[in-house]
Amino acid sequence: MLDGRVTLRQPARGYRAGLDAALLAAACDARAGERVIEAGCGAGAALLAAAVRRPETLFVGIERDPRALALALENIATNGMAGQVEAYEGNVAVRFSGLGLKPFDAAMANPPFFDDAGAIRGPAAERRGAWMADDGLEAWIGFLTKAVREGGSITLIHRADRLADILALLAPKAGSCQVLSVLPFADQPAKRVLVRAIKTGKAPLRLLPPLILHDREGGKHTAEAEAILRGETGLGWR
Image (tube, rainbow, N blue to C red):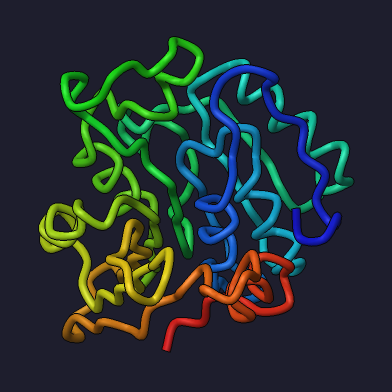
């Protein structure tokens, strides 16, 4: 990842991090000295990529799957980031207070995309934890809002068709929402959205110019997307 600045060991079978993790890492805008928690960090793709982008920020990952957690710990060590990044066993279905951690300045997540097992075929057993939110999107957003201090930020990436649900679930505890749509091509609808909110924020909703991933000229990515994926720039919230 990030032109080789992050080396990631992932399962040979099962869920493998990709574009969503890279975009989530690029969306993290925590400042130097702040603490960031990622819920469901998996093998550590977004966690480590965000930490490399922000070397003076401290990161903690929470993961319920012991095999994924073991990989995350291995990847933290392999990348020489044990002084900046930590990972612990944890589950969003359990109250944040049960982790024994003080509130963070920022929280981020790439929650499982489905909470209705009848909505999709599969997934394979080894991918189920990454695809199915057993306790629903509500549990994830509830955990994220509890995990940050007042004025702290919450950033997540999810399916575009769940945007209304995301905003509704954030509304009781967080506001000042900004939404960045991610389009495969300029002439196609968004498949992903990045949402950033502030706990107890009061500013009105802002819809930002979209990120377009590909063009029709034969390049793999647009220049903007390529720069983001290489770590040359971030997804600045404006």
